[in-house]
Image 1 (cartoon, rainbow, N blue to C red):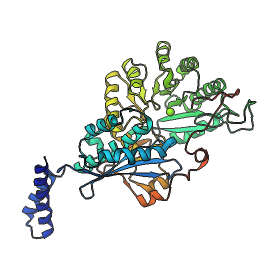
Image 2 (tube, rainbow, N blue to C red; image 1 turned 180 degrees about the horizontal axis):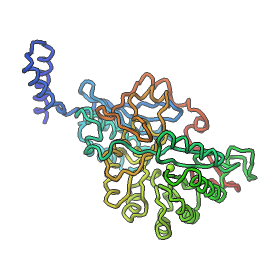
Image 3 (tube, protein in one colour; image 1 turned 120 degrees about the horizontal axis):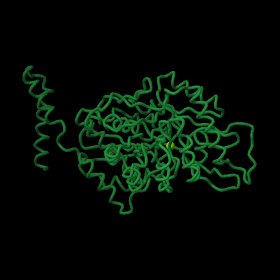
Length: 453
Ligand SMILES: [Mg+2]
């Protein structure tokens, strides 16, 4: 193989050298351009370096892996963002994957994924999966740049023009949620997630934010599932009255209720015809999905916390959910996720890849590539790219009328300004997560019991 590579390198050298000579006829130049096109994916690029860009331009810790090859200017980026334990992904890449990968070919993506995944023997944890995702997505970026194509083209091309997205509407009062939802609808969104705060309590997606205090046996944030369920039911009723039937409404329970409450709640919201109802159960309680399915037809979305493939196997194979919500980097990158998407297609399960602010723009670009190329796309979660994020990541996917469009440039179509990235180091996060070192902290019931978040 090395002999072939050398021959290709020398052909490239001849072509390049000739072009710079400036003495070509038009016909010769055309012939050389044709030859250059024919060999542009060769010779095989070899991994020269694997580095990490750790940056928090919008106050959330983003980890991006950069894989550099031995070919001038040929490199790629991959998302390995695990915001809550971001510092741990950095040494997983630098101390383990880099020495494992340097010197290996950059064009064997699935093979590299399998080798990385199995190299630790104890595999399939969130830190290692995110580290592998960083490498995996960077290799897809490299292949796209080699081919001169966006990654969705390498996956077979577009099944649709753009990814239909949902935005996050929330508020302390129902009227605020409705105003927020109307704002999205005015911008062209057809799908809106609605979340409501509960007075005096720490909710998911919206805080209580009132003068009401809940008597508790501790001083920290309080949460009780029953008042949240009652308030959410009122919110759905008002949303349907005031927003109408046309808009698709979504909601995230965030696994904050007991399993049997999850069954009841999912049954009770059936009347509101939601687009999907997310995480009514936690990954530890997935056996209850069978009960939900037997009792109602509320569409279920699940999976952003999934780690082991066995968790999605059962839910897809038994047709117990409708939308797969996997965080692509947490699952190990584009390579495993395109397989999960294909698995879902056979069983009628659609995709809704996790897309909050704690996915880097590279990760969002990977989501969009899957959204465009997979027939069983459902919907895409959307988070806006702010000014500081776009200062670091040039070429983010573009939002228009509630649709997210891929950058049509090769690979992910994104370039990172590494100097700008350094202006936003870890440790300067805004708000609560900064104080909690990137974590989520504790929320407890009135009696002091810690809840799942
Ligand atoms: Mg969620």
